[in-house]
Length: 412
Image (cartoon, rainbow, N blue to C red; front, side, top):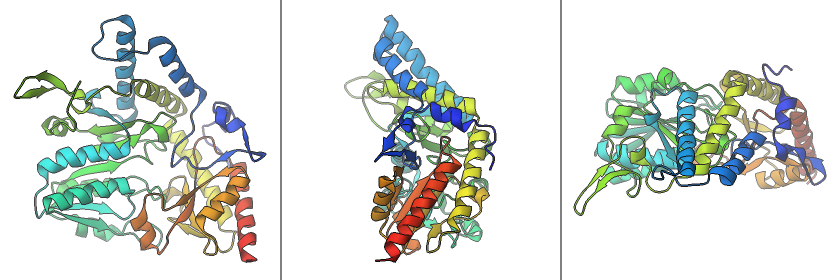
């Protein structure tokens, strides 16, 4: 198989953690959908910040504070460019994707959702893109509806029109499922939502790290994603169209989100700081810029091409192992680099422990997607997820261990 555009051997040298062994076996890290590993440049950026410019930002006029502020805000502009937002003012730092989605629910949602309105999500969603809308719907007397999936984990196309109706005020949709790996028909969903006047919130936690994302081309209203899934630190980002953000009330109150505070009223800061109360995660923001630099240097089309080739190879190998059920599309063009699977005779936690003894990191559980698992009659699955540093040889080790698991549980 080919690896278009990327020198994977050279990339792997950039990741110190991959050079170690686990239980005497070379480490195979297949849990990047949960969190990615970090290249040397990102690790070094943390060290450089704390060694040379550690200071609080925005208010200090001394050299360290001004340099920290410049790098922190410079990283914001790198993120803006990475997803092609119109303005850095549309980029809000958050703690993670979950907080970014809750920010929209608690600000835009509370101000605009009324009793009788409808919110639409899908069965592919992470809990972070379901629970905030459940809470909002219960508070406001609105209804939360879901677009269903077929046996292959694809959204039912006829429901895009039938579930998104004139009563729909908000559509919350993932670009890529963290379980089924499904790449959703996001363009069709956004077009339908806007046709009925609804706002679209996109969960980009699994897409932004793995494929080119252009928010202006998508025309989404909000996009949430996390740095730690894209080679960076534990920090989140919310993109929002400027007009929407301007009209929304603040999320949290306190320092940095204010312009003036008086005894009986306050005036809010301008965007993006209106939504960034308190001392921010300065180091994490700056280091996010280093992660963006690394991915931009690789090219996101190359990242997607590598993962597409890798998952195609993995799907072919999985098909040769009896008694394994894969969740999601079997077409590598329709899915990202995530493969969740079930072996009926074995609990996912037992499977994951056997993999660990072989030095292979996989995930076991419901992956914060219980509605999708319930839909397929599954309590849990085992998940392998790929990224830029994974290789066909690692897929071969995955499959060899999978066969060992099948043999162990077939004899019991």
